[in-house]
Image (cartoon, rainbow, N blue to C red; front, side, top):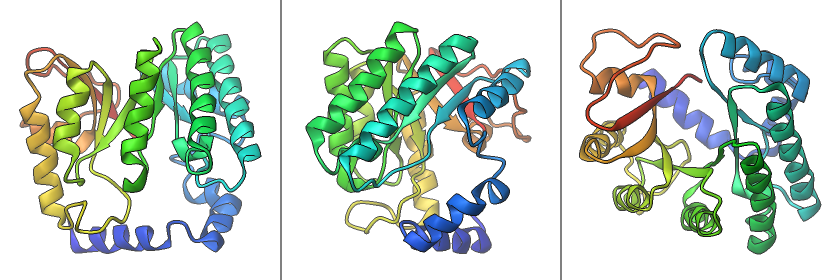
Length: 259
């Protein structure tokens, strides 16, 4: 990672959660981050998914938002996600959805948050759609894993989660999740965490990321990886193209994440 990239990352982490920055992002986000935002309405998002699908690219759809302050907001997000699921099913789009537990009320009322998440997952299961329970900062790591385990125990196997390589605990969590048959997305991690719970040096994080992947290539699992890591692991000299299919060792299934 270059010095410039590292400074940019630290700046983003510093302003994360700042209300003024949040308001600016809502106002100007589409202009600044059009590459990442499919649209301001469900119809716009579904149209972008259709375009991607026509290129042979599967999508995952998020309704942006986290860190709510009222359970009434969580209920609104729950209902919006049900609309997303219904819209994807109606259009027969090749897409799943991702949601954040705090967006559903985890930090305010864990049980109510779980019920909201379960409602979305149950509706998605009716349409054979997958729901990714996103990982947030470390105070919510264990609660998020517990939510996914509970969903699976109730027969909602159409759910999975995300693990962050920079956390010290992630190697053990990865082993456990794979053993339990839970689908994973592995990322480096993007929250500002203390040294007591996370690696601080970028090279250490990347090393840990690669080590974890290689340690689990002999497992039957579904794992999503950033494109740069696929380039490294496959020994290629060039970055995989969008829509390109790659063969990985043994029973390892690989999904490239193009954000």
